[in-house]
Length: 263
Ligand SMILES: Nc1ncnc2c1ncn2[C@@H]1O[C@H](COP(=O)(O)OP(=O)(O)O)[C@@H](O)[C@H]1O
Ligand SMILES: [Mg+2]
Image 1 (spheres, helix red, strand yellow):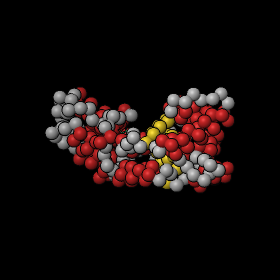
Image 2 (tube, protein in one colour):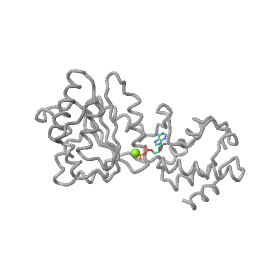
Image 3 (cartoon, rainbow, N blue to C red):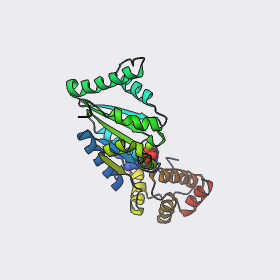
Image 4 (tube, protein in one colour):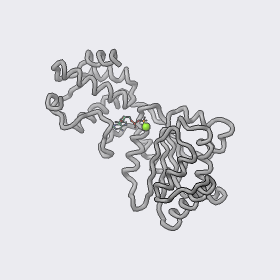
């Protein structure tokens, strides 16, 4: 199929090198805000519908973090518990977690302060897929960020998930956590124009010499995907395959409709 379309790689995959990401307005704003949050050791909430590009924006942030100055830890576990969180952090720094949970919390506190004050490194912790977090995990965020009687924070905490996460934090007993959020950003979908550019971008990355999708096809992709990057990817990959099987070098609207009917 790659030869058929004269492509130098598979387009519309999950694996995008961080330096070839498409700079949609939402992606740029998310990336800029995440960077600011890191520079100021903030507690940041990144939300957006599934497939909108949250994890991608986080990945592009990491790409810019110099490992000499930053310790970075990414945890993607929708059923994360406080216990697992502390264990994961400690083990990541080569520390054997203590047996009792209070001791583990103390280990965590002194580790974070030690890295910040003695190693002079910045710590960035990302908790992805947080919209399924239990109430106890959400409550724990307060303790994860509480150092020296709450007078300072040695780390950046980025919590990412679907928009329902915002509502989860709006309940009364989590108000103290919600108030601590210093940076919030909700990612939005690609505009119609951006969707067309996004498709063109992916094709440029694999160096196709021709336009492959017709204008009507792009319009249909936008209508169906509503500019959600992952949906655009799925539609594009499958319609490319459909066109290939039928021997068409151009993906017209009919291929998109066939794929939509199968989805
Ligand atoms: N800025 C971007 N440039 C290129 N591809 C992107 C971009 N944003 C999202 N994508 C694509 O869309 C898919 C979904 O993005 P992802 O970050 O996993 O969404 P989320 O974490 O919000 O569910 C990814 O596999 C990626 O290929
Ligand atoms: Mg994600």
